Image 1 (cartoon, rainbow, N blue to C red):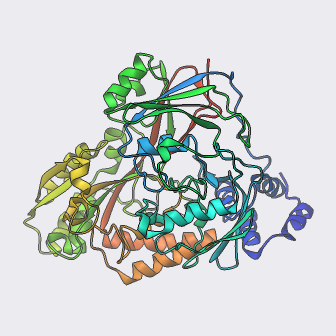
Image 2 (image 1 turned 135 degrees about the vertical axis):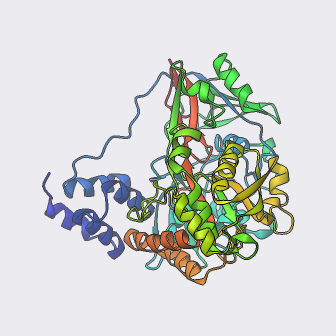
Image 3 (image 1 turned 180 degrees about the horizontal axis):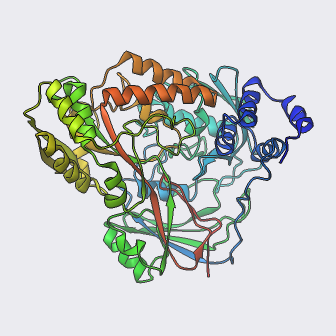
Length: 554
């Protein structure tokens, strides 16, 4: 299709310089259509407007995201992990708890499987010129299950709770250094400004489903959420029994399109094998998250469907950069060169992963610089690096990790691969509680181990990965990595509003981390949700959420 310059000119008149630069990138071919839509949604451009721009730029109509509506009235039955703690929006951090919370409570915007931000409780958002203030316009007429209308006071109170260090919220990993308590400002009943500590080009993701604690609940909330489950969502609580399960019914006062199912039921399981048997036996319709190795029988069974989402979830292998044999970057690079990443993806992960290149920049991110060469197994070069570092005779070391997903098997593969360069690894595989400990330095096997493997869940943007485990003052810097050049590049990336500026910084970060290799990112695994045949309209996210409002059963 040819470009329609008249329509493009009309659209440009009301756009900011930043938005017009993104439009130029699409027209000139510097930005792909997919990345244009993702980044445009981040800047607050509506999906219909992004579609019109794409049409006028000669790309034709955007693919329809509409799903065929199934039959209403079903009861959808879900299997999930047992929530590890009381359901509290401020502190909940485990997949089972987040899944239940998200059935009733909603976010300002939704980070979809394609990483495109879609409006939810907020109708729109936009940054100021330098990304230090983001303004969100709220949807009118939204009611909590308890009856009151959701307004700016509720949004300010909800986010302030999460940003307050006194509340020990899990969301502090997102908000620390970005948004402080008191800096969420009510403009009027339907407008909120967020005044940030520093420019942040990806901030809307921090108020989306990507930050799983950032649900909006009444300003009056004082705790005891399990007694009310008060939210704005398409389902409301029918019954909740700790450690056993929960059920929800359609919210007929919902602000949006009413949910198709009459009811949803959640059964909590203590292990994955029991969930698989329940799916095979017809007791449940969905397994919310199914690991690759445990779910091989389901993956190969035509009686079930598997929804596979590309994600940025990964297992980080950290190495101390300030002491021991891995103090020398050449040794760390040598260890990284021992990994056969193609075998990891095809064998260990059964083709359900993407290769990692020893930085947080996964293939799913539009800002990833794909021109940076992929690191591959090279034992000869690894041996040369060991010799140059004075470690040619090898050494002994302990690799500490957690018993979770396929991590123990991953650790065994690494143990075997590094033998080829004379490294003898002793594996110390712990239960998750013992591995994470208090999650602070001095009281955590995770943060104190000289070498360890840690599971990191999916994020729609790499900001948390760039800061917490890699910046010199990072709260999760288990590698003890301190590099001023890296810190400056990470800060520059996080501040950038422009996609091309982000990609330029990303390329520099990717190359620096390949040189330093404080952390090995071997692969990024797919998020798998298993369903029985005939179950349709199910929309999982790689953040452990499960949207069931359009779900149906044949």
